[in-house]
Amino acid sequence: MILTQYQNVYMESSPLLGLINHIGLIFMPIRVRVRNAETGSTVDMEMENENTMEEIVRGAAGFWHKDPGAYVLRRGKKLLRGTQTVLEVGLKDDDELELIPDPEGGYRAPPQ
Image (cartoon, rainbow, N blue to C red; front, side, top):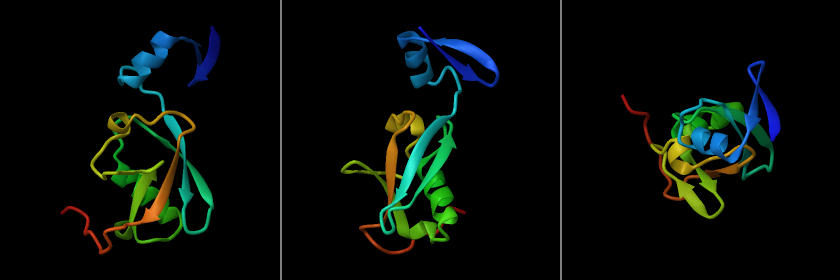
């Protein structure tokens, strides 16, 4: 077993703990890297299972002073919908996402 520190509490890592975390029963932050496809620069972000892809786009776009309505996230070859959550997408620690210009173009106004 490997001991991991979470908020100054040591827990044993195990396949069961990973499964419990994956289904959202333990709320540990997930750390991912977002790469700006235009410049190649990256930003590391921490998120919770209930965060949406739209929230990640807003955070990363804000970091690079970009218009969030003009960008989407891609994981590998798959585009991620803004309404999908971290849990639904199945993001894990150390995953890498790309912030790319929206291939459909246009500006999507934020929901009112």
